[in-house]
Image 1: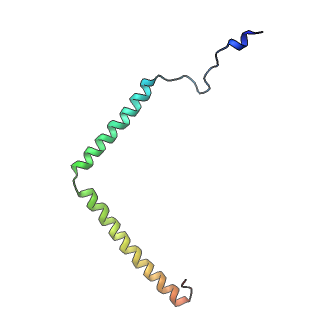
Image 2: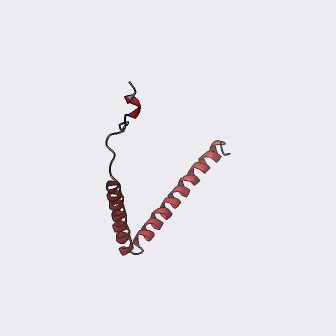
Image 3: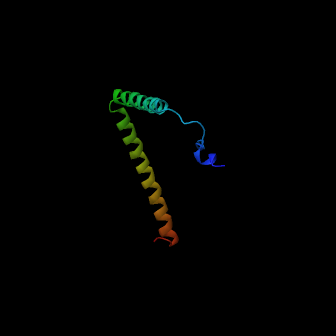
Length: 80
């Protein structure tokens, strides 16, 4: 009954994959990100301008709503 000490444990989560599989997965992710950045670089300033405009309009909308909420709170006497 001493043979059980020499038994090799089996992996819990199935077969162990070779490092090449992980390398191919990470390289695929890297190639995808590189292609995405090349596409963004080709667009020039358009993404920066579009994001800035959306943020600017969102800020103006937010300040408009905040002014309305503050006026209502002042009118109701609940202004902090």
